[in-house]
Image 1 (tube, rainbow, N blue to C red):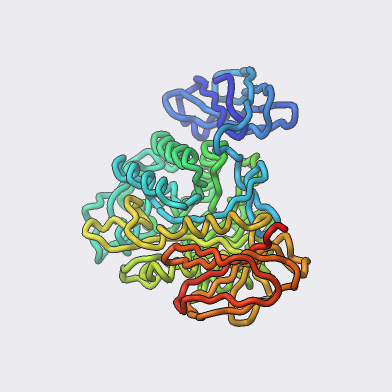
Image 2: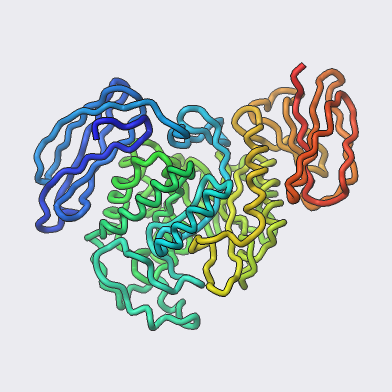
Length: 506
């Protein structure tokens, strides 16, 4: 491959030594040099005597590369050309304007995320179904794991394992005894110093499919729902895994790093361990992909300098979106609500809110300057739940997020912030970029479960504003015309209504 587009993935495959343990005994490094950057990255062993190295160029033009290390192939050099980005390639997503996101080319990014923990470890048919569902949705971010998951509705074996070896006999698992195997590695025979390249190649294929759909891959590197011993590996085994994962995944522009799902449930990990893992990301990822860590009960300290954004699970039975104002002030970073409970009807309280309530939480979070995340746990005869397996979306809320995303993209600047100038009995978002302006160019009022039959608004007497009334559940948008000064907007006296007020060009 002698050419690649900007923010694409340039890959080199070279032959090398296969004797001994190449994962621990051999190294491959590469230095990529262009007119505007010089980047050094680690390569990795991909099995069968093949070593690979990947690079994501940040500029157009001519590049050279030089390979080195003990991999057995000696020093190698070459060159390639970086072409302009094509199609919808806007580069990796970065934090922009402190509380928001934008692609590397400056295009604003408004996150509409979902969670499918192990969709990537299902059958080919189910993975294809998941990708079709994602294509038909408004989701532009998905959280998922590298390791398989052991939990309710997840007692089967995955399609592959990240390490060489064999798992315990899963026939001993039942709904009644599955908890006794959590955190335990008895019966498993994995070598935590030898990876299974086929497993990682498949995860990469899934990342590439998401990239083609314009979807960010929020990769959960570790989680505690485990019966294979992956969550209780030693410090040395953890570090080997982290370096290998970064070497394989970092050159994909749509990657986000989630250090852990529910970090506080790990039986043997401390905050010092997570800080060490974060240090590996900072050292080994030259592209500065977004980084966070997800809680179950207590928040991680999101003020830590390595954390780029908050990845929040609700801490209150009812409130999550309502607390975005507080969390923005507390952490001074983008607030991503990666779990605000799931639409569904399972036995767990985190997985049985209605579609209306999920949609309400999305709109309220967005108007407060946050970025909400979806999950779905709808019971069905096959026990295939989107939240873990992917497949087919069965709920109602996901159908309505496209309208929210469309409205979010109409925000001047990078995103919304909560407006303190509105009444105490309503929620309103205004452009973050207009924080100091007495009159904003844009207002998005949301009335949640309240049911006003009308609202009165008062701005300056001269500025014309166009008013649109949005039924966020029925997905209707009604243009009410242009107004100045004080005016009244009649509403249908039903919940889930929004009023969008935009300055009209004169």
